[in-house]
Image (cartoon, rainbow, N blue to C red; front, side, top):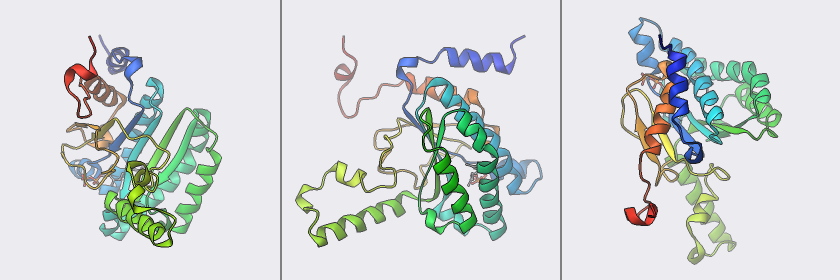
Length: 256
Ligand code: FPP
């Protein structure tokens, strides 16, 4: 009988190693609903979501994805009940501390994007230490979007550009795509080729709006705590079956 490990391995074997996305971004959604369905507090859903973070990271590393970016806490999430926000921050700290050795053993570099200055001091310090401790790892970069929203990032970029123009260090006529990209919090990260969202919602919810201009979107009804390696492989296989034209016509992107 085929076990779920066999099925996962069979999916992985079907992936074309030549066309693996370099960067996958994930909107991890559905923790609250997962917990409520089991009669548990929402926080239990977040705690169970940590296993899925690990599964997604290991799956990405195994197939050679270089960058994984997770929407872990949005600017809007600050509006949630204080107890849930505190529990999320606590979970983040415990997870980062608990996984640090494993991250280093597997060549994982930790990175963050977002308004991290607004995070509680203890959380910020833990993140800074883990970022420094993993800075030399080069197999995969995991980026946690924390207190992040794309509109926050775009407003910040606009302010920076306006200040530079006002100071005379930037010529408004010379502003290009690259000028904008260099002033976003994702500077240094390639744009994601694939964006996954769990829990059945089909929205982008203020995540990486500039960066996903040509990104393939993949939605699944699976709630984040149930997300496993097999789901990530399914998403990559679906991505590999799509034709990415970037505004060109079919013949121009598939020669012959
Ligand atoms: C969305 O589910 C999930 C979050 C806002 C937080 C994600 C956090 C984790 C998976 C745990 C820790 C993460 C790391 C990186 C260590 P929701 O609460 O919006 O679910 P709902 O839509 O069902 O209410």
